[in-house]
Image 1 (tube, one colour):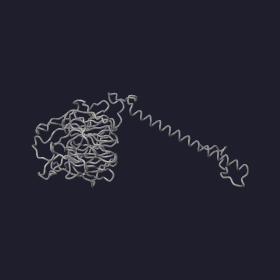
Image 2: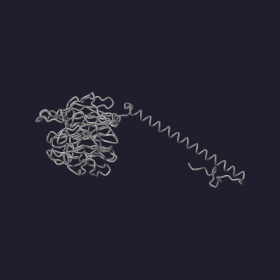
Image 3: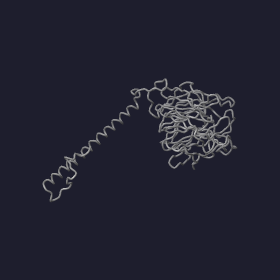
Image 4: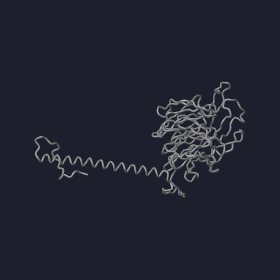
Length: 406
């Protein structure tokens, strides 16, 4: 508010001197009163603003845990309550099984919910039949690629009502078996394969408006690769880069979300490169952890010729500096094809295929077992542990979705 020119004229004397008249002293006194009043008003305004911000903050804290008090919203024909707080639930969808008989690979259609608060697995029934799928999510919805005949299209999972519905959006070209990336506003389906052809194509999926757009290609074709990242950059790691099952790559591409540009970085997966990790690797704001994976090389014992084995190694990728290191801790068994979900404090993995003994030659008919195992990895301590719960159906190539936002 402007100063009242009648009470505080611009030509007031601001400083008193030894020769000031009585009027000058009065002017100085009035000016001092003005300064004191202004300071008092500023202190009161600051106190009111602070109290207001605290009230809003406390209100928001209450709203997060009291969803029943919030208004509902409409999504199509459904009335949907507000989303659960970020990082509270994850879902393991679909997959495949019966690897004990190599010629009989049965698709699995079960969807299971994982609660981060209680570490409880709950089956939602056989509601989604797919495997090796791209999967991205925000706080309210998950989006999964599913084959409809020969065309691969997006489907939406509404977390609050736990239903899945197809969308009229297709990948270009149709493919699966690639890496998923996401930030707060969009996700990306990177690379993949179909009918023996390996692709490097990238599709952007915008959460606002649910729009899917083809935006070019990776620097190299690759399938069975893994995606991870933070809110600024995504990274596509490993996979098979020329359609050959024996040609795993250790290469990592950085994908900048702001410019959607790609560049190869110096860091690499642990030698000799790996594939068949989760399509999305949840991580903390500081680092991501890539667990297990399929390697093709001489076994670490050195006693066997080069061939596939399931790794039990854990690679740590630090976002600042883009460095990769091999942790001293390992998984209890080699694991490939698992699903992964996460929240800000830990990542939870489930299923996959495990070798009964990763370093011993075995018959192809018994070397892989569809796992029901669920384990977690705590970011602060970098410790992994097997949880007491299991999947209700052993399977591999399952997709993980979580409602975490970072």
